[in-house]
Amino acid sequence: MAEKWEAVAGPNASAWNIPAASLAELGNRRQQADDALAAATSEETRTPVATARCKTAFEALEEYMRDFKRRYFLTPPLADADYVALGLKPHDATSTPSGTPTAQATLETYLIGRHELGVKIVYVTGSPHDPANKGYRIWHSVVAPGETPPTNPEQLTKSFFTKRKKDVIEFAYGDSGKTAHFAVQIENDGKKGSWGPLTSALIP
Image (cartoon, rainbow, N blue to C red):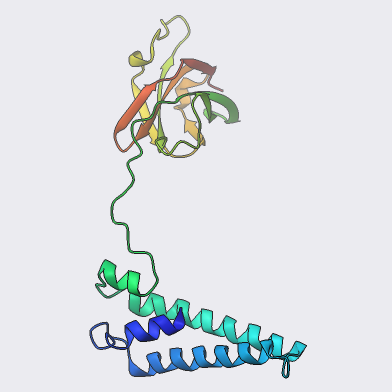
């Protein structure tokens, strides 16, 4: 691979802003690794010391190549053909569409502190590993004793978005003793999945 880089980068050194000293150092490290490999595999010179020197030489070459790639191959405007010639994978600028969420989720709640509830996302259907499940829109409303509770998620009035599967909701001081009702919609870049079931919890 290093030899291929020398062959391709050499003629393009000026266009790609590669200093002659950097290209020469790549060649030196490649030659040292080649020499060390020859010594480590020859019946006449193969010893544990030669093997250790070979390992060290290749580690030094790989470290330099990583830095060389970062400095000179990722910054300039190389064409896809250049990356192929270098033995590298061309950049993929097209994002893979992940679609509209199809899973459903609900909440489990747990006590955090005064006027606070911890919420944990629980999947009802689908997989949490689906790439379409980018985040969660948590809808909620607070209902005082004697008031009519919501019967469907569309009646919930407040919401916030989170990418966490665990979060905390802080309620107002006067909400203590009231009931919070929740529903979750999974979201992906503005695309919303179907509602999860309603759930509720007493606000401490």
